[in-house]
Amino acid sequence: MRIAFIVGTPPKKLGSLEQWVLGVCAEALRRGHTLDLFTLLPVHPVVQQELDRLGVGFGSIESLRAAPVAAARRLASYDLLYANMLPPRSKVAFSCYAAWPAPLVFVEHCGDISTPVAPLRRYLSRALDQVTLLRVNELVGVSEYVRGRDVERFGLDARCTRVIYNGVDPGRFTTEKTPNPNGALRMICVSQLIPEKGIDVLLRAMTLTRAQDCTLRVVGYGRMEEPYKALVRELGLEKRVEFLGMRDDVHLLLRDAEACVHTPILEEAFGLAITEGMVSGCGVIATRSGGIPEIIDDGVNGLLVPKGDVAALASAIDTLAFDPALRARLGAEGRRKVERAFTLSRCISEHVDCMEQVASERRSAPVRLRPAPEAAARPAFSVSTVPAQVGPQGVPADTVSPRD
Image (cartoon, rainbow, N blue to C red; front, side, top):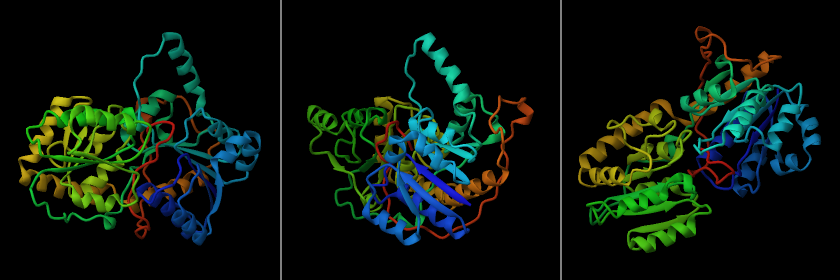
């Protein structure tokens, strides 16, 4: 089978996203398929070296975008198109729709931002949604939240959808922590620096904590970096908050943290940074949004707070700061949850399983109006085990829409 694996974000770090991309490529090749990868540029040199070593063909999404008609003809020659992180009405997405007869899987990683919309625009958008994915054989959501949202939004037959949770490699992370001489709570936040991720909420919460010696390291990049640094100065947090930028060694930085905080104000699709914190034995605090409650069982393997609630977030930080035993318990249970449900090997295997199943079925009219409720069960599919993949940990790229 010839597969076009399309990933609408640049693999420009050495992180969990890049591990997943390389792992899917390696597993597809191991099963005897041919695979070409299309991503945004730039590509990290180490990632490119591994692609070359594996024998993976490569093309840029920029080249598809520049010549959409030629792109559709090129994509039509594949036995399967496996599209990730593409806005469903983007130019590249339309090239995929036009690439008949290649079966198409649309993998949805995007969170949901609720913004007021005028009634007429809402009606027209709804009408377009009903026809946008008519050429899609299967829709994969990275959480039940995403799958349910898109079944409703696009009027999908739920039998043509499934959930494949994101995964991390537990072997890349350790629960051992570096010594903490003064005992103050060390926090880390791994995130895109965009408004939807709620970093400003976290900074304001730090001014309300009783634990005024707790510190925060912010790892990531984005258009809000300078405004957030200005807010740190305005709030007088210069000695407590550090911005580290884009890093390839987040798996090592997590050793220097007892708490991992993730506070999006959008409906988060999944929360890869949360699973990275959990598998590192951190006490995790996150907002109750989107697919996050599917990862965190509140009070068992992490703490959930309402979106945008500064006071509740400050209280949760104090809870972890003054209760080391609770931190340790949450961290241990968090690692167990990841090892049980969110491993990278499981994630990779399920994605390649999906590729093989859809290509073999080659449904001619895959996405239909929603059936009667009793017929809307999601099909079961097998999960095999693959070896742990290469590459250290990181965070998703800052793309057009917040994705995780």
